[in-house]
Each structure stands twice: as C-alpha cells, then as structure tokens.
Length: 379
Length: 243
Image 1 (tube, each protein chain N blue to C red):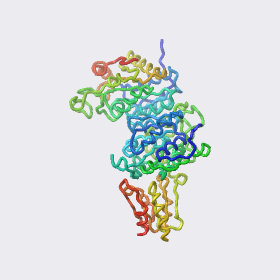
Image 2: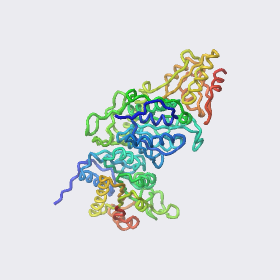
Image 3: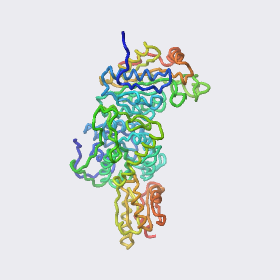
C-alpha cells in the first residue's frame, strides 16, 4: 500500500502531527465538524486526504461525523474523527455503537475546559473519565495521551494499530496545549512504520461468517461489500451478529468485550519512568504535566530527595499492577492534573492504603508548573 | 399463471411484526428488488431504530443497524468509502423525521448517492404508540391523548415538500401498500430509486404510507381504508420529483 508519508523532519504543531500520523497509519476516511482546539486536524485532512484517494467530509454535526466514521470502517477503511469537549459529548452515542459492534476507529479529543462551552481556547485534561465512562453501559476502552507533537504522530499510528487489533474505538486524549505546541517532528520512512490491520474471516460467502474469537478474544471482522453478507447491530447479539436479547447472551458478549481489553492490558498499557527505581516519592502524571513533572523530579534529585516519575502514556486500560507495585515502594504519590482530580481517584483505588496520595489540581487553563510540583515533593 | 415465490434474499423465519403491519410487505419488496436487479453481493442496507430495527434478521445481504436517526450519516460513510456498492437506508418516521431530521436533510442536500426507503405509519410503533412528527392533526396517541393539537405541537411534517427544491435530490415519490396495485406502484418507485443510484445520478427518497393497526386501534382492513380515505389527504401519493 502506498502510504505517501512525508518522510523527513518538520516543525509541526501537535494537531498536524496527529493528522499525519493517521495518514501514515493508513487512515483514508475522516468525517468531522469544526471545533476549537482540534480544528487543525480536520483542516489538514481536508487538503491531504484527497491527494491519497482518501475522503474527508465536513458533516452537519459530531453525531453524524461519528456515524459516518463507523460506516466507513464497516466498509473496510481506516477511519478517524477529531473533536473537542462539546463535540465529544455528542459522539458518545456512536462511540457506544462502535464498542458494541467492535468497530475499529480512532477518535481524537483535544481537551478544553468544560463543562459545556467552558474554555474553548484554553486547554484542560478534564475528559479523562468521560472517555472511560461517557457512553452508557459497561465496557472497556483504550485511550492514549501524547505529551509532544512527535508523540501525536507516533501514538496516532499506535491508536490505529490497537484499534484494528482489538476491534475497539481508541481515544486519543490530547490536551489543547500539546495540540497547539510546535516542535520538531520526525516522520520516518514507510518501511520503519509498523501497520496492523484487522483480521478477516478466512472464507468469503461463509454464512454465517466465521466469527470465532482469536487468542486475544477478538473475532475476525467481515467488511461490508466483500460478499460475507454480514450483519452489524448495536443490540445484544450472538457470535454471528444476530440479535439475542437474553441475559445469557448479554453476559457472554459484554464479558468478552471487557475481557479482550482487561486480560490483554499488559500488552496495551504504555508507561514511561524517570528515576523511579529507588524513589520514595513518586509523581504520576500524563500529557503536558508530565513534562513539568520530570523537571520537578530532576530538581528534587539535585536536592538529594529520592523522587521519581511515572508517566501514563496510555490512560485506559489503567495500569493497576504498576500502581500497586509503586505504592508498595513509595511513601508518597503526587498526582498533578489539569482537572479537579480524575486519575488520582484511580491511583487511590489501586494504591496501598498506607501510601499518602497528594492531588495537585487546576480546573483548566494552567499547566501544573515544575515549581508547584517540586514544592509538593519537598513538603 | 404467475407463481409468486419468496426470493433467496429473505430468510424464511417467523415475522415479529404485528398482524396487518406494512413492514413485512416492504421487507419482501426490498428482497425482490435486490434479487431482480441482481445486486445481492453489491447491496448494503442500514436499518433504523424502531420497529424495523431487526430488519437484518430477515435480509440475507450486508445490513447494519445505525444509532437512532443516524442511518443517512452511516450510509454516507459507507457509500463514500465504497462508491460502487448499492447503499440504502430503511427508516421509520420517528427515526427519519424526529431524531434524524438533520441527518436526512444534510445527506439529501449533499446529494449522497444513496436510496432512502422511508416507512411512514404516523406513529411510534416500537415504543408503544406515541406521537410521531407525521401523526395526523387530531390523531390520538399515547402522548397526545386529546389528539394532536396543531397550535401546540404543529402540523405533521411532509419530508418530500422539504426536500423537493434541493438541487441534488433527483427523485422523490410516495406510495402505499393498501392494495396489490399500490404495492406494485410502490415497488416500481423503489426500483427506480435503486436504478438511479446504480446510474450514479444522485439522492432519492421513497416514502411509503404504511398501516399500524395496533397503535391506530383499528382492524387491519380498516387501517388500509384509513390510509386511502384520510392519510393520503395529508400525504399525496405519486411521483413528487423526477429530474
């Protein structure tokens, strides 16, 4: 496949890098609705995708955007949309349908302050829980959180790969700060980019289609228009796609949808650590605040304080094991977030009860500075 | 003598629709057309949320359900991704005209090369007989126990009137299923809609006035009479636009 990557070195903002990451991953369909601060992703796709026989449509709203993304994915394309807070709220209806129908797709949420119209032009990290629990019903999801334009590129490729492999929508939670920050971005050559595509049933016109889950608990996906005569439904269904409205079918289906993420979380979770091996004070952060947190830890080390940093590169599924281990080692865990305390609750759930947990919050608009984090480390 | 047999495209299973419902006839018409136009491996359908939510239980070709009202947006994603396929939505009046009004209007205005089969039975059937945007003035439903009041709720909406001036809409027609003659007419409207799509001409929508004896509180026969005598006065039959 000709991916037509712009191999080379660039000075890009996070949104542009995210769009190019999608193209590198094989994304050839984008549907969206203008909203700040994610807009540059759609604008970039509008000019780039037609060159590559791709499609970029501006839809009437975010509901229709997400619906079109599902249609395109069912038709066999790698598809994406990008939005911000208010638009993400509207997309959740169809994100739920994507979860239930196991539809690979990527949704970028460039977070701004909320609720409602909130702070359209100021960044936040306040949609972490909405990404996890926003659609109704029980489910697991994958969410990634880049902290640089380079990672906006790299993690968007990763997002498509995970989405195709696990047949689940993958949410990229960029904070508005990273989306508009400009930095050096390296686009590697085609051969060094690993691309994963969905497994498909082995035989055409196999009715009902071969839908036995693989060892990751993910069934092969029959695309529309290939002759499988496949059915896709948001109703509780059996393994062939036919509705089965019974508690047995519901428990079987939902358990597998959860287990395919939960039991494979070791393969999905991505973390990064700095000075953590001997740390007795740990900072756990993500997105923009992971950059200031590392700085704070380095300064603390200069003051002979054994501080360390754990960065959550993926936010969902949550790295439960890692938090348990860390809480056995550290006497204090600091969690800086540009929200009123979302990930800190997860840390509290899995940490040892003797570990002191210190949240450090801002409701939106401000980075948690290295000075502030250092002060909490030293206090 | 003509022998009518079920086409291969329809599963021979027991219907979940109420006695006297129009969906059974329309599911069969769709399956017959897919068979006659020889597009079984090319057709992709999008089912609504409403009584026809499990349309895919009956059809043996690619079918997906969309979230309530979103079928035209899903169809847009599918058709743009696979322009050689024949894509149609099958939607009820709550799905298409209430929650999905934005999706249908914008898909039509963009001129998406899809066919829309719009089944209008003047009522929400699946949820138990509430008012629809198409409910007639004065009609009693579960949520209009004193009859639909035009000054409070507005008159019923005619989607064909809304769409007829849209530049990219090429064909609009309204049929019904009250007699074999009307069923055949409706089938020809639907055939033309699919043919227009296969000729890459543009957007088309066929509205079908369909009976709901259960929530109209009528016998099946009286429901058909009600369409012929009253419903058609609100929603005139025939070809509304053909360009």
